[in-house]
Length: 260
Ligand code: PEP
Image 1 (spheres, rainbow, N blue to C red):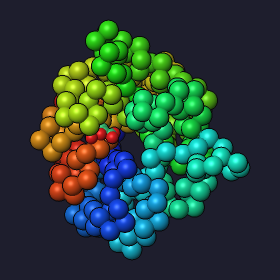
Image 2 (image 1 turned 120 degrees about the vertical axis):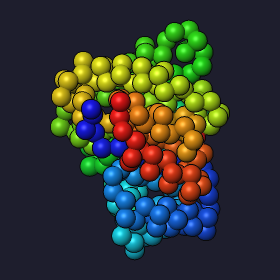
Image 3 (image 1 turned 120 degrees about the horizontal axis):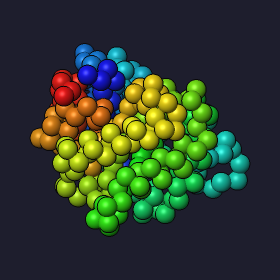
Image 4 (image 1 turned 90 degrees about the vertical axis):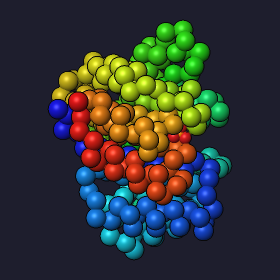
């Protein structure tokens, strides 16, 4: 049975405002205050990081403050961007790289995602590297090839010593925000292959210790079935993270579901 600790992230995307984001953060923190069987991170929009960070600081909580993106350079003439150092300064602990909306809506190429992952890890932060295939790629039987390509590019310059701060999120693009979830078997199959690729890139000990989340329309009603799979170590949650009760139920499912 895997000993990896479950990990659940709530990606708020470009949702909430200062008042509703604060309310959501307080509700999640208070509900999970005495629960410690899973690691939890929340990813508010940039303008609310300080506000949510101060709420986290004021309450007894192990929930990590996360940011949804980060630029590759430490400082300089990059209008509109933020660096890993700035995020650390705002008490951010974990940053997403290569979320499917950044890849497919904003148009970030694999190489840029790799540079971001490296900047995040070099900056002393945790990185959640997101990978996953589009519907067209899945239908063409290219799921594993796409995951392998994104993983290789995403980790191109990531050294073994940084791997303890790395998490992978397998998020099939067709399942994100669509209500369609990969079957637990399909997600497990893809994630086992991702773990195999991590072993090829590093070694089997490293691959066994890196957590791989599943993301794509995870809900309270389907979370336990997904989290029971041996290579699914938690979830990256979009829509359902905007409702405190739903998100808390998903975290509890991750914390209490025995692995097969
Ligand atoms: C996500 O944003 O990473 C995500 C998985 O979204 P949703 O849960 O809404 O599909």
